[in-house]
Structures are given as structure tokens and as C-alpha cells.
Image: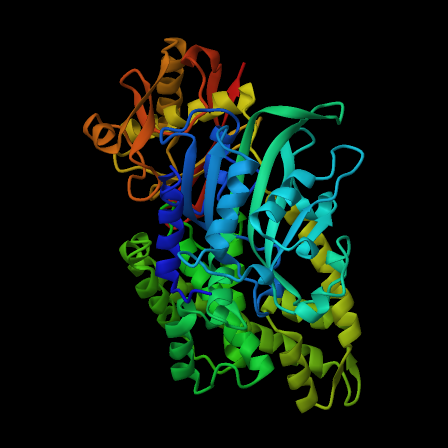
Amino acid sequence: MKILTSESLRELYLKFFESKGHKIIPSASLIPENDPTVLFTTAGMHPLVPYLLGEKHPAGTRLCDVQKCVRTGDIDEVGDSSHCTFFEMLGNWSLGDYFKNEMIPWSFEFLTSPDYLGIPVEDIAITCFAGDEDCPRDEESANKWIECGILPENIYFLPKSGNWWGPAGTTGPCGPDTEMHIIRNKEAAAKLNSDQFDDAPKGTFLEIWNDVFMQYNKNEEGKYEPLKQRNVDTGMGLERTLCILNGKASVYETDIFENAILKIEELTGKKYGENEEETKAFRVVLDHVRTATFMLGDVKGIVPSNTDQGYILRRIIRRAVRFGRNIGLPQGALNKVSKTFIEKYASVYPELVKNSAKIEEELNKEEDKFSKTLQQGIKEFEKVAERLAQGETIDGKTAFRLYDTYGFPVEITKEMAAEKNLLVDVEGYNAAYAEHQAKSRAGSEQKFACGLADHKEETTNLHTATHLLQAALKKVCSDEIQQKGSNITEERLRFDFNFARKLTPEEVAKVEAMINEVIKADIPVVMKEMTVAEAKEQGFTGLFESKYGEVVKTYSIGEFSKEICGGPHAESTGALGTFKIAKQENVSAGVKRIKAILIK
């Protein structure tokens, strides 16, 4: 098994697929563009949605990259050996090109060849789709793995809940996947038959790679039909793969976190790994500070707030503060830990260096704000304690309110209660916490669901209107205006942009009139492919630093709007209807939001 650093693993993966005819594309922003189904890019496929649905990608039909991702659905698991909220996904795609016969042997080669990862064949377990009344058992993938050299006894079959991807909604592209796991407990694995994978003790297997084969379309009748354009979508977790290759017990013991751990040890006087509870606190701080660093340093400019991405960022920073206090991390320390990550990733993600001042400012600001909130929580605790006699119990709902409103972990409440000879109803707290989590997960299942955004006429028209809005804002308000976020549903568009104040009524009227004049003129929307250099030279706007490959799609609406974009768009402006700004909002300091509609 080859020992690799994070830098060398990224390079090895990309070079391998480049040798198989793939074009390397850069990582997209953590903030999805015009995709209302997710708050963050949770997988490498998100930036490629239009191309998985059939649009032509400028770089061709074989692509590979290393994509920045954020997933918060398992945030409470952070602190164990493998879960992270931010992670890097090594991925490659076939857009109607190769399929199982090519992808599975390539996966086997990269995993096992001494020229690449060199993982022993006997250490690899494979899962495939077990089949059901809708679609057959994926014997094709299983047989291809065996043909490559995987041991038959190390192949397991799982139902749709384990080895099936999609569709995102009730209809759309979907298909079986095959997952690659490292066997970490061979004795336990040997006791399982092919249908007992889920019965294995925790820690028996660690998934590192997943090949998704989009080969079906689920229609409105609920039937699965063969898909015309069959795609391959793969994802290998960089952190987990590093953990395996380097023989580490946890992803936090890889080179990615090495300097950050040293910094926390220096700031707290504690040693990582000496105490189970403190080790979890170390890991939560490491993960959350890294995630916050990437969110704050993103080209789309996220900052802490009370809604959407900003709310998640705020929650992550505050959670880092709470766990940091458990190991004696002093105020202002998050920024010092963040700097180690900026240095670590400087050559891979230069936007972190470019935005380092903003990262430092926002981390310090949010940490200071939360520290004051904690002080308020202490006052609230004192009020609760005054109402109780010695030996009485703080009820579970009150204990949870101290946590939910003031950030008090129940452990702190118990410690402070003990000092006053009070008890805490921990079972009641756990029940209140579980009830809260159930409500959070119910909401986040929609917010964080992976999937393909739709290309309906309404969303397509609103996307085109977003281009017109940005152009009009530049002309009416400031040429320095840039998009800081966008979200489109069938009913409205939402556009975030850098500006110091809300638009005046006169400016709103001028923007609306300007856009409606362009719509009335029925100007064709023209798409051309060109190099980034050509696009810059011809005056097209876009986030050039990290989003695009060598060849890009450009969309022009006469001379009014010229942008780099992946689509989709209306054929001409006359199809849009009447443009109307419905609402203006503050997002954060220096970032404003406009919600607008199209009236037919």
C-alpha cells in the first residue's frame, strides 16, 4: 500500500484519469449556482448537472476533478474517526461515453496497482445493487469485479437504500452504484454472507469510492426505463483514502490536520489523543474551523447570518467555540487554527489566501459575538438556579433551552448545577434534543438533498432574467457589482450581490424599466464556446479564478449582457414576460439580496 500525502494523492488521481482521456476541470464554488435543492455543493456532480442531463460540456465527455464539498447532515457524528463536514471529493465522469466495462477495471487498477494506490486485493470489499421488482440484480458489475480479481466472498449485495442513486425527485435519471470499501476487521467480515453487509459490526468496513451508473429514467408512472444518455459519476473521499493509505486510525491523523493539531496543542497545553472526550473536542474544532475557513474564503463570499448558508456557517463556528472551551481554547484561537489550514491549502485553493483578511475578521467577529451570548447564558442559568432549592432538578426542557438558545452543552449545565447542589434531568434533555433533531433533519432532508436541478421553462426563463438583472444593476448602481449567490425556483429568482445599501425606489424603477425594454426587444440569447482568455478579451464576466476550464460557454444578450455560464437559458428575451422586483433584503454587511418574478 502506497503512503501518500494529500498533495500527491490529488496529483496521482488526476494524472491517472488524464491518462485515460479525461480533461481536468477545476473545483467549483461551495455555493451551487441556481440550484434550489441544496445550500452547498455536496458532491462533485452538482456543478455538472446540465451536462448529466444532456448539454454538451466544453471540455468533452470525459472529465475529472477534485471538488470542494460540504455536508452537514451528519454533523453530530463529527468527532468520530471518519466524519467531516468539509471534505474533498476526487471524481471522474462519463457524459454518455464509457460505462461499466471501462469504469470498473479502471477503479480496480487505481486501487490495486503498485503504480497507484497499491491496496492489496484481499483488503477490498465491494457492494452492488441487490435488485428488486423495479430493476434486476447488478450481476454485471459483480462479475466485472470478479473478472478484475476481487474475491467473490468479498462482494456484497444491498437494496436501493444502500446501492442506488436517484432520482432527485419523483422522476428522472437514476441507477445502481457499486461501492468500494476497505476491510478493517477481517474476522468480522469473514462471518458475513453476501446479503449481510449491513449486519457487520461498526468499523468493519470503510467506504472510500463510489461508482454511480446512471442507466435508468424513472417515469411519471413509476416505471424504470433505459436512459438514452448513460452516465458514470464517481466520488472518492480524499480524507478517508489518505487515512487508509497511511495506516491511520482516523482521518484527523493525516497530514491535512497535522499543523492544526500542533497549533491547538500549543494554545491549550493539551495533547491530542490522550483522552477520549478531549480528542473528540479536538476533532470537532479541527473539522469546523476548516469548514468555516473554506466557507468564508469561497469566491461567492459567504458570511455568518441567520438564514441559509450563513446560518449553517454561524452554527459551525459557534459549535467550534463550544467544543474549544472544553479543552481550554482561548478566545481568538479559531483564527490562529484557521491560518494553519490557509497555509496548508495555499497552492491548491489560492482563494483562501486571497480572502485571508476576511476569514480572520469574520471568525473573530463571530467568536466575540458568541462569547457574549455565552455570558448571557450564564446569567440565565443563575435565574434558573435561584428558583430551585438544593437537591432539586433542572428539568430537561430548561436544560435544552440553555443549550439551544445560549450554546450551553448539557455537560456545562451539569457542572454548574453540581456547584449549587442541583441535579439535571439528562433523560428529559435528551428527549428534547431528539425532538429538536427530528425537526431539523425533516427540514434539512429537503435543503440538503442531492439531486439534479430541473430545467423547466419557468426556471430557465428566470435564469436568463438573472443575467439581465446583474447587467442592469451594473449599469444603474455600480460597475463593481458581482454575483454573491443565486437561487431559482419555479416562482422567483433570488440574486445576492455586493452593494452597501438597498436600492432607492428610483433605482428599482430604472432597473425594472431597463430589463423590460430588453425583454420587449426580443433579443436572441446567443451561446458560443471560447477560451477563458478570449472571453475576458471580449468583455464576458465570470468568476475566472477557479470555476472554469480552458474552454467555456458564453451567453450574450446583444451588448446588454455578456456572461460565462453553464446554462440553461431562454432562446430569446421575448419569452420572459414582465420583470418585477418583489423584495429587497440585507444578507450581511456589504451584501444585498433581490427577489424578483416574471409576470406572464
